[in-house]
Image 1: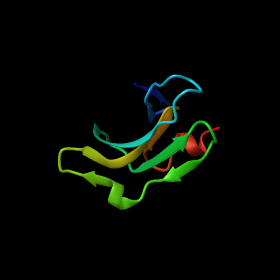
Image 2: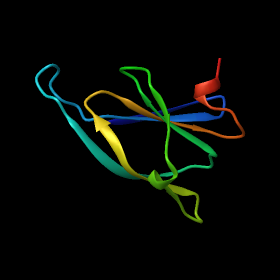
Image 3: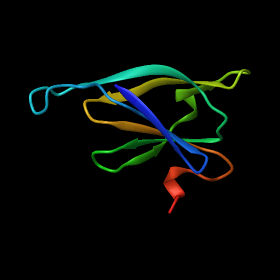
Image 4: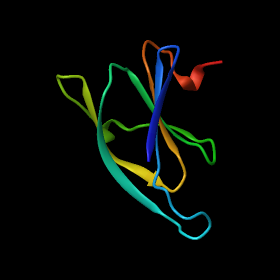
Length: 94
């Protein structure tokens, strides 16, 4: 499952693996590509509120504006990729 949204020039992409609630414990990783003109990317865990800066080795940018994210964690609850530009992100928005 996935979804995305935008607010004030910042973007977020939500993803998760739908599972039966309270019957399955699911964890995995995924590699995906997103076209993005951003300079900051964070990963947020919506269950515990943690926000992580992604290490450089998890992201590969190409000359066409695509970013490949390698081995992002996937859970049975939503995770958010948060994209920002020029110092503005969902992380520091009020």
